[in-house]
Image (tube, rainbow, N blue to C red):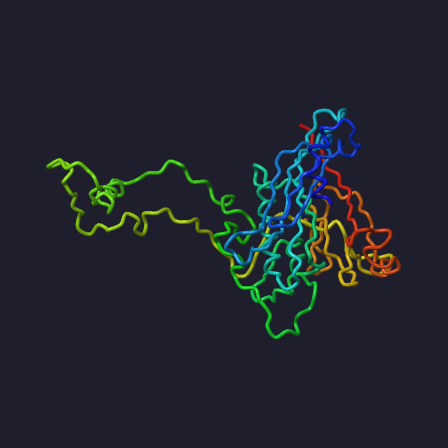
Length: 378
């Protein structure tokens, strides 16, 4: 329904009688690769934000078995517009990302690789000139439960994955009883993907090479004595002493021009042993627990079992954990969490006949959070 609506929007804008919400929001939509018509969308008010860039993300990579799925993501960089009357103040840009990763509970390796690609794109889009990042909001259906390795990786910025059963990454189902279990091996993805184990593009970590190249005299002479130069072209007019001359290759010179060391090597970057990281400092807008009921929050009910797989992560500053537990604590930074729409427990949803029901037509509940941003004087 969303895809067909977005496809019709350009023609609707040309009509005179347009529903108000068509005017209020600008929508960017990224359809899944393959034959599916669903995908990811990010909508914003052009009266509140100015678009700086939009980066659709495709996880499908031809020839890589690890990345042969059609899931996608979307990353936008928005510049908040300062309301009139606030004077000469500035606001940092805001990076908004959205994704829907693979569902398959057994393929945690695919989920991690897809998240690494998304985080690399977010790192590139949100990176400022001083190397820091602008505020980030990352939303989506991650098909992973709270406190699973994938969830902890996003929140804590590090995951030691080598030897971990692939099903354990998302925590959706327990397959420990099965004899054969796919286990994660290091490196998780090949270097040809161009993404480091810190979830950054290689070009972001290494300075761009100069387009002007320097060649030695010996290298250029190899063209004179390469195999093609030593072959007489068919139909060449014979001119004694000119076109009948054949250059003699110096002793020890290679037969082929493209010998080892003459071609430019591929970029080489260090790989960690079984650990991936990121430096985006994200935390969840939700606590995943309803203290008033003493029950966990639920965002969906696959097979009749309530669970949380949908999230809103946002940039926050880490602070010391006085409790001595492994969970990191966060405090508001440039981005302030002002409020959120409460979720429901599985018990309450069962009273409404589960999901979907007459009150909620979707099989997922809506997540909603309100944020504020700091303004700075010039």
